[in-house]
Length: 459
Image 1 (tube, rainbow, N blue to C red):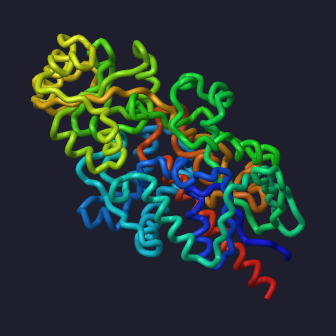
Image 2 (cartoon, rainbow, N blue to C red):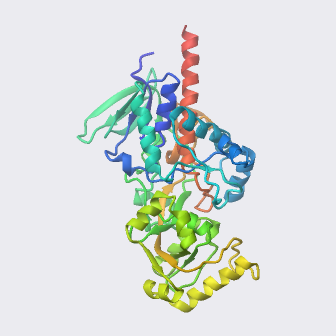
Image 3 (cartoon, rainbow, N blue to C red):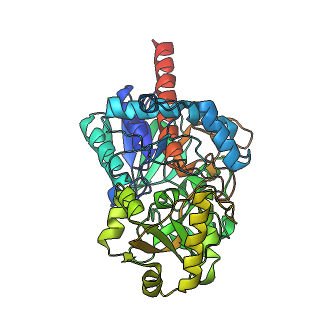
């Protein structure tokens, strides 16, 4: 068999996991990315570095009982039972192995935040890094790539096609000058993210969120869909996406939804709440987009401010001067330009909910009292990334329309159909990064086993 490399990885975000794992297992890997600024411009680097990993040793050390079965129950509940069961099961069982491998083999300082639980997760299971920002995750992965003599990185270079070859798939690469090169490999992993940067595809598949700010990698243009479909691949869940209702309007940086889970309120420009904020930040994006002016305010206090400072994104919001503060709600309302009466009524109602003397009219079951000084950030809805794509199996192999694996083709992350079901409401925190890293990890392991079997047969 004549090949140039064992694996071509298209996408230097979560796809780096496949490169590192594959190299560890004896594969020679070429990573290509069309974005010269991928270190700060792809969705992995823009994430909060959160990875659900049920049953990890980090949970055990914190006294938290969890399991893949419990996580799958949460996924089923959040998605209304519509998530792909095979992929969900594969990722649920791979999560703990993945984060422990990242800690022990790659050297990442994995930590488990336990001071709050994200919407839909029944226990703390979303692992992260200090600073809780994807740029730190990507930097660490690139350090591991640099240490390996089996991994080459070619940037900028865009994978524009995959052609069947006698000895394996042929990856057709193109540089910015339009020059093309063909690389023969045992396999190609599509890790180019989804289609969030293509307004036409967003309008076709996600009309409810079309037109809001897109806060993702500008090279996420649906390359995997185009390449996969040309080879006869099946697609699914193209209406699924992760939105976010808390992008700072002025800083264009994420205000962590941790604020809400610690007790923050979200009001529109009339000073009134308009739903249960704790239902989830993804589905709340479209809700916020439908409010007058398509924006709102996150209201919180000093205690919540301190809790949010663990997040690099929130530090950026602070540094940008996007947090407004006041000693009274009346003063805060004046600074925000919203009516004080409704704002005071909303905060008073949440105090009653926290005291257990009344039920929240929107069904919010967790609330705390807010005390001066008060803080607020103006927020706008955003589309972070799409969650539908090429259908894959439990090894991340791309499937054709008959449900059979396409030879030598894998997909991970936004390039593949994820586990968020349909729409935005099925998204659980971390369920974008888990398929990005987890499917890449599974793909590398499967390819290494296949390559070993072929070598053994030829011996």
